[in-house]
Length: 158
Image (tube, rainbow, N blue to C red):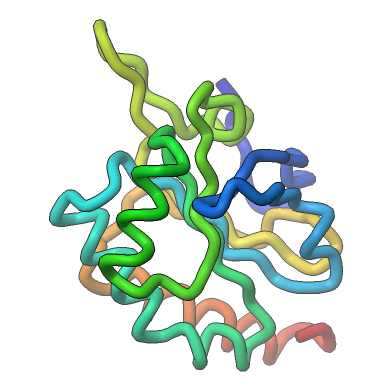
């Protein structure tokens, strides 16, 4: 299990999104990335968190951030979840939990594995700016916006 912290290089990842298209960290070089892990599509907490990111997407984008959701659900589950809630950001299908494992964000239960509700804020150079290991789904998007705003004030990069 990875014990990543602010200042560490973000592990590279490659997975497919809800449309079965490849998503790689390298695709977002030069942008801030909000990589959020969540346990399960279309469950109450995961839906609340995703919809808050959806509702705040223009503010997040204005701060130079790309939101990426990630769980161990498959592409079909992600496609249904994204369509149902009109999510305007990619959802990575990490069915083998490789991405979650590389970020220390996987829980193995006896018969199933789930992504932990962790978020990593990654800077434009691929360095972790902040990690969130205790996420309140009702206010997490606002917390990210506040932190992005503070980071923007302290650095010259968007």
